[in-house]
Amino acid sequence: PPADVKVEVLHKPFLCHRRTKWGDMMLVHYEGYLERDGSMFHSTHKHNNGQPMWFTLGIREAIKGWDRGLKDMCVGEKRKLTIPPALAYGKEGKGKIPPESTLVFNIDLLEIRNGPRSHESFQEMDLNDDWKLSKQEVKIYLKKEFEKHGAVVNDTQHDALVEDIFDKEDEDSDGFISAREFTYKHDEL
Image (cartoon, rainbow, N blue to C red; front, side):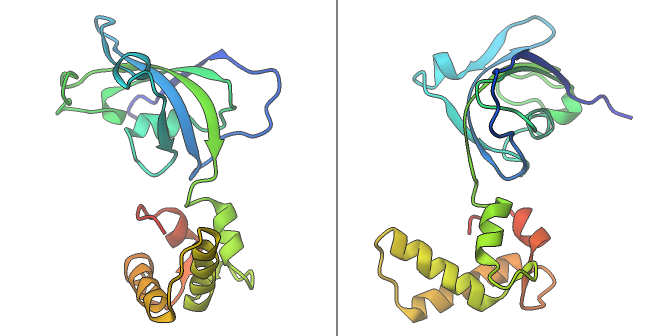
């Protein structure tokens, strides 16, 4: 079997109120190095105007090795991930990263937020707890979201939005978005 991510915990906070799970948004600082010669190819401290970066866990937003290596992490935790090429940029490489490179990341977790794809938002939308979303449920949720942000949207616009969401999300076209269809799709709701 191909090599997996090697995870080392460099620092763990004393208290941990919550651990990262699929669908969470994570605010991270990181440095990335090539294992072969230790050269740095990216650092949020140096390259991103010193700003940390948001990353959504579990939807392949970055390389697969991040999705695998950043689960169950606490705010304030630092991890070192050693990621084999198959879970990074593989045979092609990317930018400053040569083909077949093993990558080393030092990652610092600053904040966790519920992503749009979290189970919490699914449960909030699923009014009758049948683990699937009807068009009506999605429409009610959208209305609440828009009102929260002070936007006025008429019914026709809502219906069009709901149709559009169902076109994209309802893979088996049964008129419902299942928990699985919801949680593992990439488009924002």
